[in-house]
Image (cartoon, rainbow, N blue to C red; front, side, top):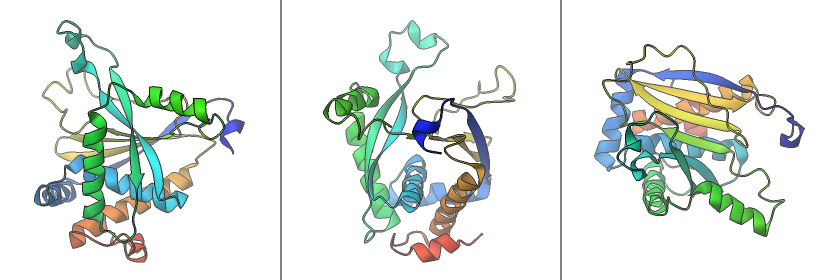
Length: 231
């Protein structure tokens, strides 16, 4: 279906777990290259979307924690303090995965300096100039909670069900570390995306990371190699 044909937003979650061993190998690559593990995963997500869309210049919706901008009293309040910024992605096939990861990481650091002007405000300004072009907003989201784990994660018991459903979002990709393993959550808009599409996207994404673990780095243009994967 086309986005305008979706009359009711219903999301479905696809979950994939990365083993502790593979996750440790990815983190070691990041440490060696001075790239955060979160940005390695973000780069793979961007490359996967590039493969799916055929567009090498786009933006991602990045969620951020805005709790620490609040007063000390409100910092202990339970609630949703999520903010967002827009991250520009430019993919050059002549570069390597690590080079792209550095570029994305540097761009993200620059964008975070202007996080008070949220992605929502930015999209509103864009729509004033060309409402038709930006009527769908920036529908692909990346959410990372890496580094936010603490000993109180299970204070209220084990999570039995969890999903995000956000207006104007088509795919919300979330990463979370639990007990040393990495969990990847893909919350997607049913009707616009189906389970087969999501499985194919996750397959490509997983192969990108497998190829990185196997080789340490690779040229982005070598898509025929990493798309075959080493699973």
